[in-house]
Length: 231
Image (cartoon, rainbow, N blue to C red):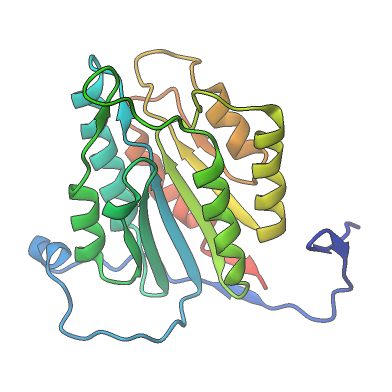
């Protein structure tokens, strides 16, 4: 037996149903992934919401390598979207360059291609990344209670300055909103440097893909994990 909580309060389970989300549909031609559909709809009937939350702050030495890995991972996530999915792109330091929820893969791919990394030590100092952007994102997803909600954080979310209170607030917000965070780490050359990435995933019901030179190969498995659920 286990308790069912809604906003921290116990609730009785009256009825539930099994939901199976269809998997990715492969484009007939490669150009279809970069061209918007002629048919659009404003009906919000998706069964799964996917958010790509991308950190876009790198050190000078690693900027090109990590930005290339970021593009690769983000496009790998978009390639796995199915017909019942809506997805969005959020940049931590360039929120205006993202993309709101859409089923249009071309718009999502263009948002990923807009990635402009901030290089530490070059130009004006970047804003200090605390966990507020990620926490606010998770909190906003609570307004969609009928959909499966998954966040793929690309890049280690290790903040420059944070407190235990901020971290615990993120975890509590994810629990209330029923949001799973999957962390796709980019520290590929240093084994064991993604402990915070592992912690975020473990405390929000997601998984961390770290300590591998090919994290994109794991994306399909993560999507399969989220294809079936109860509502």
